[in-house]
Length: 478
Ligand code: BGP
Image (cartoon, rainbow, N blue to C red; front, side):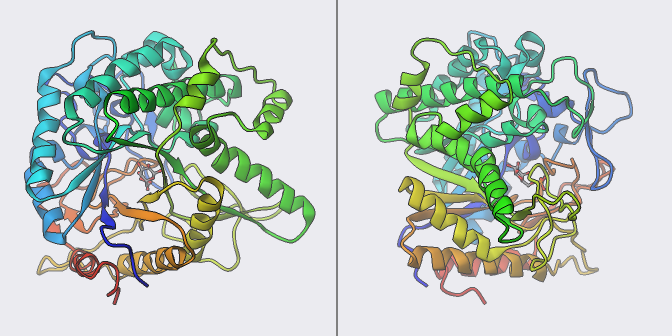
C-alpha cells in the first residue's frame, strides 16, 4: 500500500493537556484550568473557585512549556513531518477581552515554531482546542454570548498575523461537534457560567448549546475568510470527532435511528463548515426540539463564504445504534452508542475498530471531496516501566498498525488522505478523565495521577516502531 509522497506523518497534542505553566508569563486561567482530575470510574469535575488540596491536572500537565526543545527533538528523531499543537488563547489574551496581546505568550509559540522549522517539521495548529478564557465564561456564558465572536476574532487574527509565515496548516475548533453533546459545554462551548460539578452532569440545554455552536460556526467561517483574504497561501481546516455508528440490526428502525445519529453527531458540523449551510435535517431537529437559533443579517452569507480548505477528524472507536432500550450501552468519552458484538474494547471501554476507519474515510471523502487528515487516533492504555526503564507497548503498536493499514486501503479506494497525527505522541492529560494513567504516547512522561513525577521523557517500543513506519512512508508496519 503506497502512501502518497509528502504524506504528513506526525503526532498531536493540545495546550491545555500538555503545556502546563498555567499561570506563567502572564497566562490567564482557562476553562480546563478549572477542571479537577478524575478516573475511569470517578468523573472529573469543574469548579468555579479553586479548591485547596484538589489536583487540577492541566496546570502542570507534561510541562511542554519548559520541555519543548526536548520534545520536538524527539519528534525529529522519529522523523515527524508534522506536529499538531494548539495555542492557548489565555496565553495570548489572558481574559480574552484585552485589546493588546501578551507578548510573552506570543514569544513562546515563536520559539516552538522556530524549533519545528529547525527540523523541517510542519506545525499544524489548532486555534481553539477544548479551552477558552474562564473570564469569558463569567462574562457571557462562553460561546452563548454573541460578543464571544469578536473576542475570538481578536485572538485568531492576532495569531494569524503573527505566525502566517511559520504555520501553513490551521484548524479552527477542535472537535466542534462535541458541542452537540452535554459534556461539550465544558470542553467546547464554555457554556458553564455558575456551573460546578461533574463532567457528565452539565444541565442539558439544547437551546444554549446550539446557539453557542452557531457563534462558533460564524467565528470559524470569519477566520477562514480572514486567512484567505490576507494570506492566500494558508490552508484552514475544520476538526470533527468522528464517532461512526452502525445500526445494530437490519431492523429499519435501527437503520433510521443510526442515520439520525450520524447526521446530528457526525455530519451536521462538517456540512456547515464544508458546504457552507445548515443541512435540512437540522432545521427539522431544531423545530422538534424547540431550538431557535438567533442569527444576525449576514451570518448565512458568512457561513457560505467561509468554507474550509480541508477536512480533519479524530478517530478512536465506533459504536452501534439500537432502537431497543434493553441492549447494553458501550463506553466512550463523549461519544455514545451500544456494544458491537464483533469488537473488542480498550481498558476504558472504547471499542476498537480499524476497518471502521476505512469506512469513515470513504464516507467523508464521498461527501465533501476535500483533502483529509486523520489528526487524532491512538490507544489510551496503562503502561508499565520495566526495571531497566524500557516500556513494551506492543498493544499500542498493534492498534496503530491496524489503523494505518486501513488508511492505506482507503487511499487505494481513492480517498485523498494527506496526513496522520496520532493523539498524545508524548504522554499527556486525558481530556475526558483528567488522568495521566491513560497514556497514548510514543514518549513516556514520568508524571502520575497524584501529581508526582520528575517529568523525565523516555522512549517506548512504539517510538522505534513509528520511526520505521515514517522512514518507509508506511510500507514497513511490522
Ligand atoms: C479527543 C480530544 C483530545 C484527546 C482525545 C483522547 O476527543 O480532542 O483532546 O484527549 O480525545 O481522549 P481522552 O483524553 O479522553 O482519552
